[in-house]
Length: 254
Image (cartoon, rainbow, N blue to C red; front, side, top):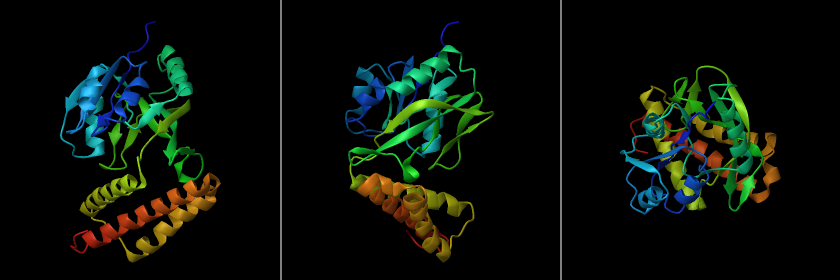
């Protein structure tokens, strides 16, 4: 039986320094479809030079952009990875093994992510294993949820794959803070539109719980100073989300 065709479909915006590695780590795929939202650097030129098919679409949210990318692929099974994610050798082998069976175990597969943080992978706390669904049959799975913190909804069971996605999400702490600011604003806007108002209790309690859960209960402290910075930054992000939501419910600009 011939192998099931498998495309990959990253979304991009100014990823010139990362797009080469992103595409090369997917070299086992039959097609690379890049959906770019207006990069001003060499992202598009580099992607085309490596054989990718590049489509252009204005960005209106992560869920919508990824859904567009999935639908633009020529085949039903898709590997939907971000430009800052890499397939390690063990994961590539695991995908090849499942592909040889016609992806018989499930309509979707879950993969553990390893996040690079200041030069080392985090292996504890909220950061790991950070399992995400990235390989699926689009006839039985789809991007769902809000436009930020989107997820894949699956009609059926989800199987686990060996290996890791290596996640190189932040070039610097300043970039991380700016990205989380955008996430918080988009989240608060959508949640406020759903009728939620937030509360002072959530502003105070939720960040404390997030830090305690990640740093203590999930042993984020075992990642040393990186684990502390990660847990503290995520706690601050949670506080930021709920402050913005509370302000929006009162008609205040955030």
